[in-house]
Image (cartoon, rainbow, N blue to C red):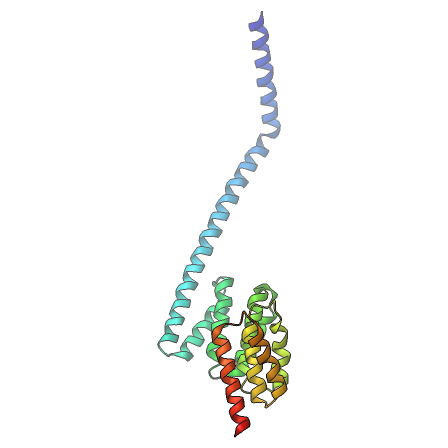
Length: 219
């Protein structure tokens, strides 16, 4: 008797499954197809991004090779091409912009500063890279811009929590020295020398600047 009940139960379950499949089967099939397409799409995206990165990396290395060969104008153009190419990854575009500005600074200060300012204003780069761009722009301008302009640009970068505070302080000290502003120069040199985290190279440069300042006073 129990076997009969078991067979009936199995038949009921099969009938329930058949009805469920007739009702929901097409949705299950559609979901499986969508899953397969999603996985395939993601795999293609990963492959395409890796291909773009490899191509951009090769172009970036070729541009650096031009720098090493002393072909600065050609390198500048190569970096500019990478920076604007839709096929380049965002990381390589950003790096190329930095390198393009660096090459431009040799012959066109204004154009270089414009690129650095754009990088500094782009929050997508993150604060560290924004600060780096801002400090480089200020450093490029040290020889030509008034101290007040350099101070406006770089003073926010000198706070203790900023990654490039040492470079910003050194640039400000140099700008003040060039402007014959002894008070401002002393402010920045004191800050640099008092900071135990100041790199030895920066500390040495400031000590040399102070020595030059003392020599100027004696002469």
